[in-house]
Length: 227
Ligand SMILES: *Cc1c(COP(=O)(O)O)cnc(C)c1O
Image 1 (tube, rainbow, N blue to C red):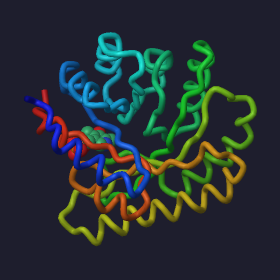
Image 2: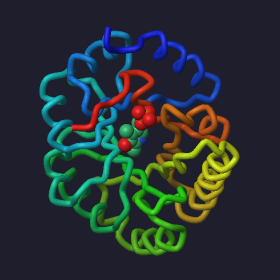
Image 3: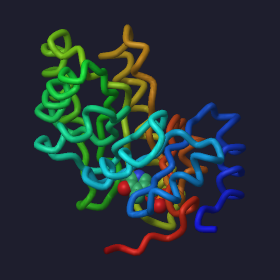
């Protein structure tokens, strides 16, 4: 058994009172592992690499909802646009424009989350608050012309630290920003409701701070060995 089905069941139980959903992060794991969790009832899977997601999607049931959670280059959007449900780490207007263009070709709407930089680490991607405001002000002028993308919320990754108070503060800050953005830009947009935060090591805190989508990999699929 490669997939931890008892961890899966306990995560689902834990999510219930929060009405949050699970994105099972299956990057670098084989399609057979996804199939095992699919057979246990899971439908939302998250992947970080374009070619890998395309390969797996072609081998697995069509009712899987694929979430792309990695850093996405504009020139690769076309490969996933025919099937991807949600893209979690959007950080530029140019990328939104390209997603709209490629989604239009398949006559689909792709839900997008804007990635916010909440961690201390320099290496993590994402927008700061000023960049987010600029992006949204520009987006406002384009939104009507881009019907194939919908901004559905925000995503963030907390600092990788044992300092739980710091992690909690980062999640709480993202929740506050979400509320502000909702009020200022998306008050009339019911699709703007998602807050993607929390991974295997910090999802309990993320739920307490308002996460609606937790992205959990190693807890379900085991540790990853980097190629
Ligand atoms: C890999 C990854 C996850 C899952 O991490 P785990 O610690 O294995 O749960 C979540 N979010 C993103 C963006 C990732 O790249």
